[in-house]
Length: 113
Image 1: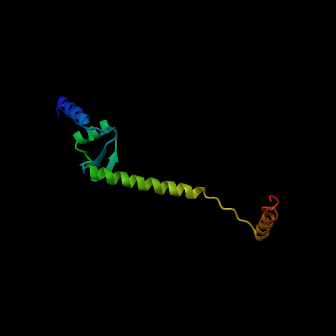
Image 2: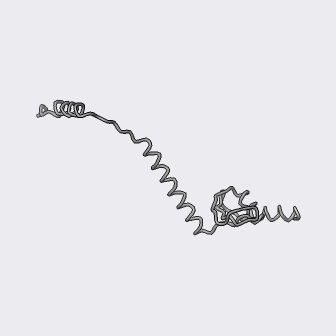
Image 3: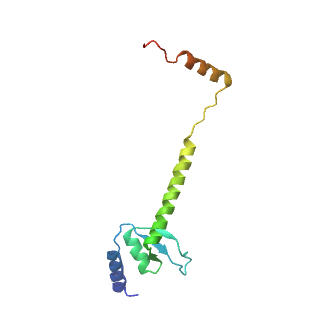
């Protein structure tokens, strides 16, 4: 391959990409590349992958699906992290009765009238 053509095409494609981190969809390659995997990469990497025939730029619908999947995965991870933080205290019956009796004796009074 002519290096001048390669780098010219690389610059042209990079100039056409408006996002800083575009989403690309991988293509099947001879060295084992898996087709259909969406990835968000820097503009220079996206241009290189397109020029080398490893990926294509994602359509608006594919980008929407990709972002929705990542949002759902983040929400699930946040929920799992929150579940780890939940603390449970085990209180025996005598302790529980003592706390209730303390609340009743320290409850609101009508002395303000």
